[in-house]
Amino acid sequence: MSTMDITRDQAAAELDEVAARLRLNNRDLLRVVARARKAGMRQRAIEKHLDISQTTVYRLLRQSAETPGVLEPTPAEIIDRRTAGHISTEHMMEQLLSWTFTFGTVPNLDGVATDAYEPGSWDDVERAFYRGQLTEDELSRLMDKNKDGLERAAHSA
Image (tube, rainbow, N blue to C red; front, side, top):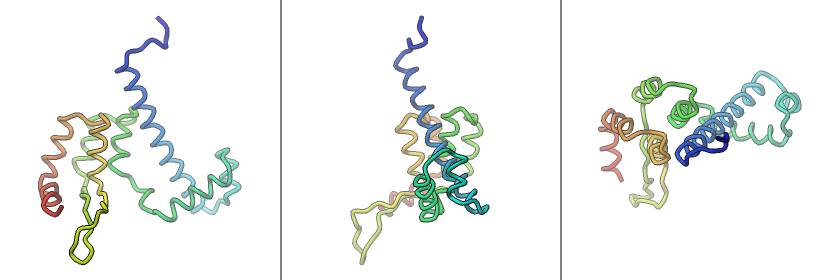
């Protein structure tokens, strides 16, 4: 049997794992570039260490400056770490169950709901569930823990 002979489920699991690793690597790249710049390294030095273009370094620095929260951990990152095999399910659930989630809102303008949506950190959980990164049991446990916040969010919509 060839190493290329796998089932669709195995292929899907491999794709999910690689996608999670890519997202984690991109986030780690953003963090390390921001830390290097904060430590006083010039863009050219960062470029040489990473073997990427100076334009890419500039883009990463601009992204981290314009959106400082992008450097902070997120529920999506925690879930990706489990999907990529970096942490156990127990560790992931421990972190998520202790997370203080925010819930998406529809902004009002002069008392009228807009057609915009401002996502919260709970959206990471929902997206992960629909991607197949969380089981129904895991989602249920998280929903039970965050029942009050979910109810408030539903009533404010």
